[in-house]
Length: 306
Image (cartoon, rainbow, N blue to C red; front, side, top):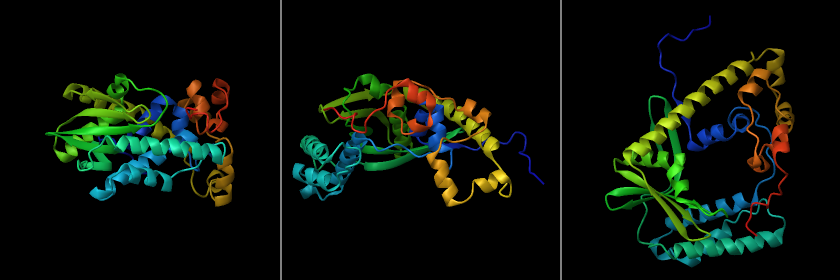
């Protein structure tokens, strides 16, 4: 006998990261492809600019884990070289050229740091919850400055940053709230460290502005949670049904991943796309007719600042 939910029982917390919430805001179809469809639709080829960013982040995290005496610009360059990700580049020559640039980025950046000033956390996972949402995420670096914590986020993109990027970032605000609650230490300052220019963009939140970000996160979480439930209801099928059998088997799943997902019309309407220039950079572009018409195809290396 089916068990009905008890009236007045609280809704289960929506567990997510800031990235998941931002994906919901950016494009609901991409949200569905990323977090709900199983098997997940096949992604396009990797992006070279993401390879640069991941390689730099990994090298900087590794640098702080080295013994104090090895925290030198040379060590940063070696870590970057040993962990270089080659995916997405046009050819070996382009990859090698960007490896050289990235080595200069990390070695130049760490030369501005005090190797003895150990962060509170590197690639530190933090989490917090409210009555609506359970949020978690990973901070690039968490510093202690005086009696307060500071959230530091590395950026390697070609676009110059503004103070508004730091002020409006939902992720940075959530990280500050979660770090403060976990460590019982005030955290209001967030920083974006743009390695290509050496610029540090700062924003100091108030308790009120952090509260506004958290309420916004709750609003988005409530919307996404309702959509998730409707998705599960629409696509659910008993294991023994024809539809359920069609969803079984590794070969069938692999074939489904290569094709545009087939979902009920009400689900497709609920997770409508948000066509725009950003569609050119979407990992799931091949599965979205609206996205393919919204912007031109991009090569995997087009995001690099040549």
